[in-house]
Length: 428
Image 1 (spheres, rainbow, N blue to C red):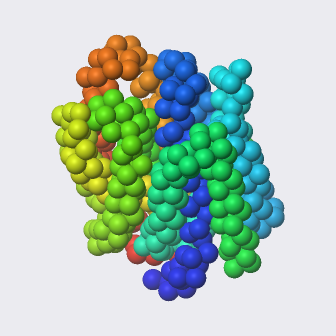
Image 2 (cartoon, helix red, strand yellow):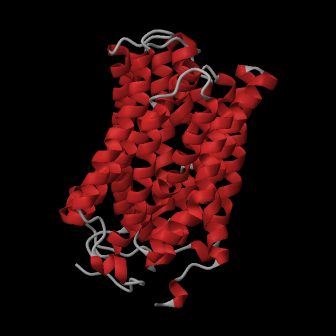
């Protein structure tokens, strides 16, 4: 094992902070927007679902192209620091417009704001993830980098979960959300600065290939397996996330406790990080990930039986599903980074663009299809609540079960990745 390839504490402290504002911005867009636009702005679930599906699929399609362009640009300019910086202004603008829409053309305002936010978010996040793959080529060192990034992300989501409700109570909905957008901007600017240090610069080397060869990485069977299982897992998470506020309001009748449920969920995710790190280093990343999905499946099935007032039961479910969050967020990117080292024809930006493409497509399908389905099953506020429980709990559980079964038959990491300890070079 090459000790110089193991990330130092200083490197982890410089790399991790940007994970916080990226997650701080992504969570409200992913979690709050559907409920906010359905309840406060009166958009129908079907129209909202169509917009979310269309824009998120567009976002997914752009990621491979952004990944390929980023690799070429970074190769010419010997690093990704400026690319990460490039996405910051657009993210700030898009985030502000999402929470301060033009109500006269609400559907158009939502669509354009999402497109702006997603484009610039992708530029920064794809290159941020790719940089993590370039900072270390050690099997366990990769997990330390992704875990540090996701630890920062969990701090971001804890803040994003608690602040909107608190700010709106003290300053009103309009001014509260404006302040929330301002906090996002400040955190983003402060967190991107450590990555501008010279020590975080890495040269990007690779072949110049036509854009369509981006998808050639899919010829690798373990990678295809990884992406299919990741799609299933992310779709399940997207369904539950989209319906979270609907479930808490309608089934539990506990709207005021929603921030506390989110805090329990994300705090459990942060506290569970060492567990998944230990399991992945002592056994394998794939085994740890599979165990996490099994725990999440049991928790989702339990949620189906909750009724009004069952707040303690739901808090326990939030703890267990939150515990699995760290594995679901840190292990797939770490596995992907290992795969990129084994492919001499591709580079990390290419691979992480592909991962984001698949993840965002899964999120689009999960969020975009569940809202029209919920309306088709007869759900409306206070009516046919069984449909809400079924969509929130049973559908994600069944999806996770399919992923678990597939992992029993498929390999998502080759034997040479699992037992090599340190990856010293690329092979074709």
